[in-house]
Length: 121
Length: 107
Image (cartoon, rainbow over the protein chains, first blue to last red):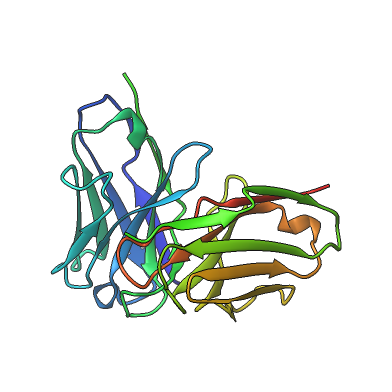
């Protein structure tokens, strides 16, 4: 079955970097764009970034543009989020999510279980 | 960028009540509107896409409607298992903005 498994979360100091991974299985990863979504503790969902199926196009939320980079390795069926110059307000659970169909302009289904990032000194 | 708002931010209703949540976009986005349910500590779950199409397996007491900038999620008869936060989301263009959420609980 379709599965997304995030990893790489942890505790990091402000200004430092962290890389998240999302391992995909159960579908042809290279056919789909992929998203990152985050949720600060007790807050709502915030879309972070999308990468095209072939890695050719990326879009970012204003809050992370210039600090975060989304990438993928289709040979490893893995999505990444490189997070640099982390801020306290980047703390939260980070989910990867797939568009429901091969169109990039699609609702999100499925979602991974999330990985917690805590930015604190 | 298109902004998404939801109302109310929270509500409390009795079992069996009809519940309506409203989502408004700052520009027209029809029909690119989805609704998700998130229970405490859980992953968001897709309920409705394309404004009104019920995701497979979702109970028929959930329904969606709307057009242009104004959309509605309705629970026809609230059940205890519906306690959750509900989010709308636009997906016609980046950014794929979510509404701020509506928290639903049982009175």
